[in-house]
Length: 259
Image 1 (cartoon, rainbow, N blue to C red):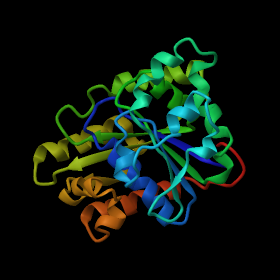
Image 2 (image 1 turned 90 degrees about the horizontal axis):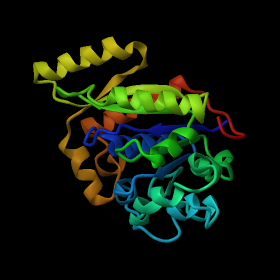
Image 3 (image 1 turned 120 degrees about the horizontal axis):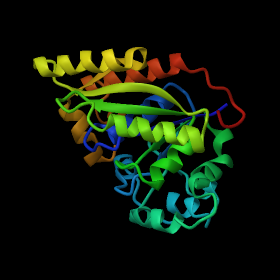
């Protein structure tokens, strides 16, 4: 069964899109058939994989204009496909407000292609609006990147409230996939203190892998490449390789439908 994972945190600048792009790429490098859905109107996953926004894309599939299969593009990474976005996605929320089953449009769109993939990752917008609710209603689990900084847990309680609301009303099976610590500067005591704080709060949900601050990770999107192609020998690449293995060890996906 396909594992659908939403990568979400309404706090910006925590490494959400970096994680969505590079974890998807590394899962594909492990041999898993992987789809990345760019569900953020900023379209950074699309540009980060070297894809130019084009029509139709995820916006058209979301509003039911085309089938999801028509918006999926190949990428430079074997086994990794992308459902790109463009700026029109920013206008999707008001369009969906009065729509029937408005929280389930993404889930409906994915149903037709889910069986073709082992993993589907959804790069969510940095907000708790209707797009994020659609992503959580479609997903089996949520992966939450948290930056190793002073305000690390700020806003996470609001995200957890949204998760619980989605569980209650739209997706009873939704669970936390894992908590990923990002942008660690191991030279500072503050970063290490945040690691301990997050581990104390979330316990076994925290991945053992921590993503370091990395210039190469920051540079890769401007070249339209995930880190595994831009600099496979970098510390950032090694971290996402290890994260992919950890995610794979926690999951044993099988073919044949939405999990």
